[in-house]
Length: 388
Ligand code: HEM
Image (cartoon, rainbow, N blue to C red; front, side, top):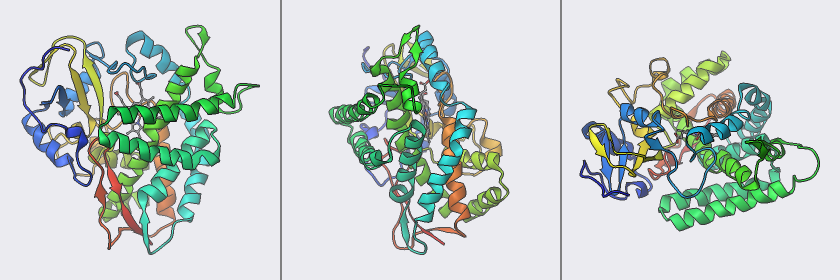
């Protein structure tokens, strides 16, 4: 890589921020001064215009940032296109609609089991079990694997927080072992579930290799189980902290206005986006937000900061789904934009609907404050609430 050029600086080791602090305000301050900021040996992109511009220019900003090949996340160009088309076939509106009754049943069961009038731990008792159950149902994974997956998410987040690459690699390997055993159990006979269907796919006229199936499943589950659980934390926290919004969403739920409920949830995630960033590698020297980015530089696209840019959202903390939908970057933009958006919004809508239908109010717990996650993970570590 070229020598880093001079540029606006940020605190080093930003990605390893301490748990418990809301780093959004720091990034809001920094973005106002430098929409593209130097962070150690990489660039951090915070401005909405700058993030969108890099994400929609894959020729200059490659997704191949590490030696490890991730399908489709780390691929570029035609190769990305081919694998992405395969992935998209599993996430169509029809497939998502087929899954909805099971997701609803899972959500209803989790909500029904929650105690009333005492503190409930949103992430541990709602977000994580719901994320694991819906993903397992979707992929056809056995329910007795759920505790292993929950434990794995905890370890994965701890590894991300630690910033220790060896630990992250070990956790990824552990996950691969789990997936490989699921593939082994599906080698014979016709496909009986989505995992079996995926491992029988072809690409470029040949059978998908095990490594590729594992990589695809890792990206559907490894990162996204955590994102889904985090999103539940953000949404429940927001509804508890802003009772007027809670009443509004409750009315949308009672009116069965599914589209408006999903728009509300996407807007809440814009204000407090738990899926913080993705990386790119500059393929050539280029200018971004007035800064000279050197060829080979690592560039971090910070979705959370971009989603709070007052140059695009007049009042970044203001809840206004209709006004802010078009510029919302929660699910990214460009060729790598999230293929799981419809699935995620359906799952979050079903859970929120069951939660609001089964309660008259969701309040912050009086005895315990909510605690922020480390910025590298995003959202909330703890959201204690009381359901009534
Ligand atoms: C709250 C939940 C989620 C959020 C906020 C989220 C957000 C994102 C974002 C911002 C990207 C763009 C990455 C980039 O440009 O480098 C992305 C990509 C991706 N997401 Fe999601 N996602 C979520 C859930 C899911 C789910 C449930 C799935 C699958 C079942 C999924 C599958 C993927 C895949 C495969 C990619 C890579 C696409 C590509 O490289 O072409 N996501 N996601």
